[in-house]
Amino acid sequence: MASVTNHKNVPDIVVGRLPLYLRALGAMQAAGKQVTSSQELADWLGISSAQIRKDLSHFGEFGKQGTGYSVVMLQERLRHILHLNREWPVIVVGAGNIGSAIARYSGFERRGFRVLGVFDNDPGKIGAQAGPFVVQDAARMIEFIRERDIRHAMLAVPAEHAQSVTDTLVEAGIIAILNYAPINLIVPPHVHVESIDPVVHLQKMTFYIV
Amino acid sequence: MASVTNHKNVPDIVVGRLPLYLRALGAMQAAGKQVTSSQELADWLGISSAQIRKDLSHFGEFGKQGTGYSVVMLQERLRHILHLNREWPVIVVGAGNIGSAIARYSGFERRGFRVLGVFDNDPGKIGAQAGPFVVQDAARMIEFIRERDIRHAMLAVPAEHAQSVTDTLVEAGIIAILNYAPINLIVPPHVHVESIDPVVHLQKMTFYIV
Image 1 (cartoon, each protein chain N blue to C red):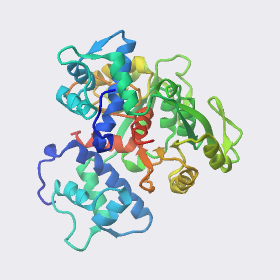
Image 2: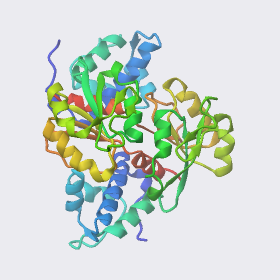
Image 3: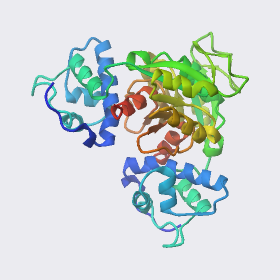
Image 4: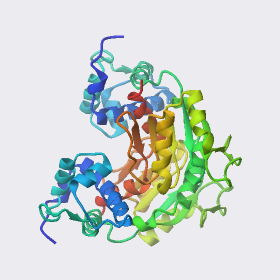
């Protein structure tokens, strides 16, 4: 592989677009497309082709000038950059509406992740089914995470418990948390948090309405 | 109200942070806090106080130098800026795992939105219960949207149907779509789309792992 710039210096907003490029390329491949261009990707994603070329330039050379990108090769490179050239185990914490919906979602595995377990501390939920999983007692979570060297967790507990559960996850070794609770989590610098809050997105769009 | 800059020139990334400020202020208020500072908000949100002051400066003066912000007043101003000084009706399209979980979520109303209906085109789902809603036939969706002048939709249909359903929503008058399908939607310029894809977030965080 060609030498690349130091990935640690890549702006976070650029990193955030790479999964979107990967997703679009996957859709192109599914549609039978073998070669694409920054312009075609741009049209597909609603951003400028200059932005795409600039984003990719952080990671070295992609394809030859004028011949476009190989859809398969560009995906491979992006997966390599994102450390997705392996499967990552992930747990779901919270077996309520959202946690159960996540546990049933079948879209993780072909994109690099495999849900290994679902946890809750509610005796009424422990032992129940959440999609293909039997909900486990949250008291066993730390051991489960450590034994399997799990780094990723999806957190779907009520807001009032989200911080204390986060502290437990971090203690167990989790370093990437996808947070569905509508609060801002406090974590040490080595832990990454991404948050999903539908109301935040609805509110943002409402700014542009009227 | 003091004169403010033209809101249309505010960078999209700034607009995207306003709901986070609003959410943090709501939590502060719930915790009994009456006054806050850009530094406290910054600590709460994990961003810099300079960023917060710069973001807010797009919208005029907030509070007096050195006395901090009134938690109640700043929320009021942010709600005004985001057009949340009224309640917005919203529909859920797709009554699968995610759509049903959204329909059951009780966190919309106190933050400016009210779900009015849930739609699906699957005869096996129409008439079934999704939280407090009876799933309605998607064939009646356009009429429902027009009669109630609804602008917001949450889209939780399978990826392969998301674009065609989007076209229908836009035809009916929807201009803000929260998209849970893992594809990029093509919409006219007057329509806003925000997308929620857990895998995109997991993949982004995985860049930083190892």
